[in-house]
Image 1 (cartoon, rainbow, N blue to C red):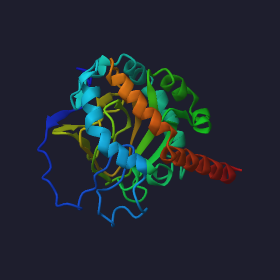
Image 2 (image 1 turned 90 degrees about the horizontal axis):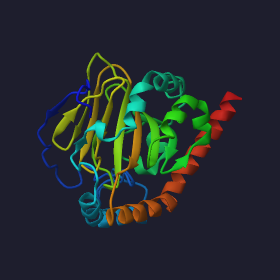
Image 3 (image 1 turned 60 degrees about the vertical axis):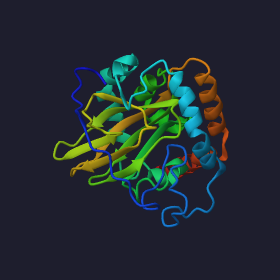
Image 4 (image 1 turned 120 degrees about the vertical axis):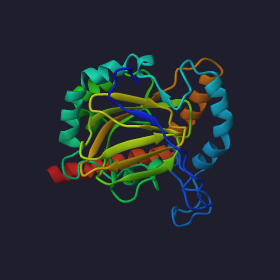
Length: 284
């Protein structure tokens, strides 16, 4: 996070531990609730990638963290990632394209409908998305609709995913965490309502978005999001590879290669293709 950023940060108390089965144990790959919580997870047995992520996360994260070439703190300094300046320089252009596609009617599906890694995190269509890249795969139809954003995003080193993240008024994304320390998340504030409080807790820190500013954080720390306003919050969400030395890079590349080839991610790709095909028919 830049020194002159308008994004505010303060300490926040850690949430009290909830009784077992009351809070989903989520992560960026699985999005699956805690074992035994049938009310939150109705899709049958957990996919293998979920189980693998949970079993290997601790071991892999320790090796990756020890090999990191940048800070492993919950919230990082955007100045450590020179490419974030291009996002800030072009944020108005990116916002224009986001407003054209992500806020136009039903242009963005509910995240839970097109991405199995987000099931159970937000209810209904309160958290919606417009994907440009997902797990290293380009979503060509969507990139063609956002050509200026595409030119900026494709220059990001180690790009894994990029999408417009749209949070409805009053929405709350419950406490959850990412699956691998090999990825870092960046948010570019595009539309931030001024009539309330839009905020995120990362570990024990509260951060707030500002239009045209970037926020970089490690989503393997538990985090939670609120939009306590009457407006819609829109950010460009980027996930990129953590700069690593060996052996952490080998561990990270191995795990992410497995994830990208998994049936779980392929399902998400198929869901996106089906959504875009349906939208083309409606436009026709």
